[in-house]
Length: 264
Image (cartoon, rainbow, N blue to C red; front, side, top):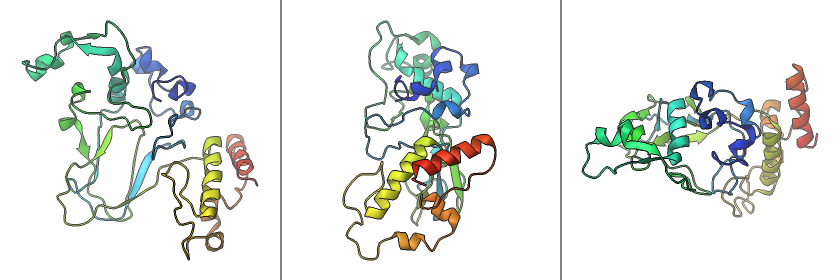
């Protein structure tokens, strides 16, 4: 989707990168991402919502090396690299060459014949980055762990950030988190929330998650009656309470459209 006109291209998210103007690429500019489509291939677990940030809340004490998050701080440079990687090729392969010689600028060129290869990208799958396909990222050395987290700590990272989990868990306790991305109220997110609400009422998994009967036939599962006991803020977050339309013109419009999508 990151390379497709009918994916992130709908908002021109990476246009500056593709035209070679990295200085004009602002990864924090979010309005261009509102129209982007991040799931054209119904990937299992893929997210169709607009996430301002990915994020999770820790449920355990977890230190580096104990199954926690690793991120790449190069960020916009790394983003530009993996987006442009399909257009370049090595003059000589790594066999029989020193690493620095293989990575040297004069050993890389624009591909003589462009093709449809997108290194590490396959329809319905997550973008996979590794040292073989993306050697200049030097992921073995450039990935860093987040600091030790404790229950209740919230960690957020940009959706373009290269991230992974520790390859080994050297701790003695579970590494547990609740995945809670930052999802502002947008037309697409309000539409998703309406679908999620309908699935909750039926007791089946929410959109974007693998299907199945879920808790449909479970006795004592969560219900609308349970939600009625919660605060208005909590009820709004799951789409069963109307938003109060107030604030600036833009905020009021977003809230009105959100209420409409939810049938209020």
